[in-house]
Image (cartoon, rainbow over all chains, first blue to last red; front, side, top):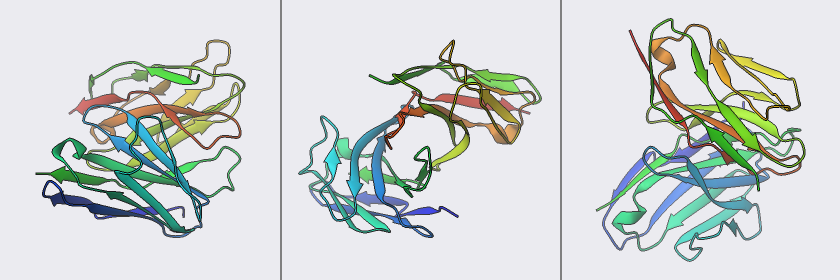
Length: 117
Length: 112
């Protein structure tokens, strides 16, 4: 149980285009989903926290107009990188909480590797 | 604020060697502590956890004990295998919060 999927697993796009990444909780309803960015050989940087039906809360320094997050249902959150540029190339990982764990366990997706040419 | 400090890698060991990856934390109150593992090209998987002082988390031969007196949660394994090669992240969340604070990760390579 508690499986999180991401789609696509990798994407290559041209500079200036927008890319949408989906994060789904397959066998549970996720009260909260998180989006992380991971640079090579570095830790995960939390970008934003999203709750179903409400606006995402972005971490300091993350451009909310560039990284659009939509949490349309309890099983789906999307991250859209708008007008992507090469510096946006990274590994994007989502996670989801069931809200039923006493220690708020997060279940992670397998990640999406974005390469912007 | 809350923070996690873990030993910097990379760590390279021979198969069957003993592994220790140090992790210390700074937090107010009583956080829950986690070790996550990331295999090449994959997302993070929870390896083990401890939610209160003196708890020992264990999984797949790995162990870590929540030491409140030293604010530590060191990861250990008595005999590593090649398949343990991965990046290991120590993390915490504060009671009542869903946000995780991660250490920088330690890359482990186990050679046959």
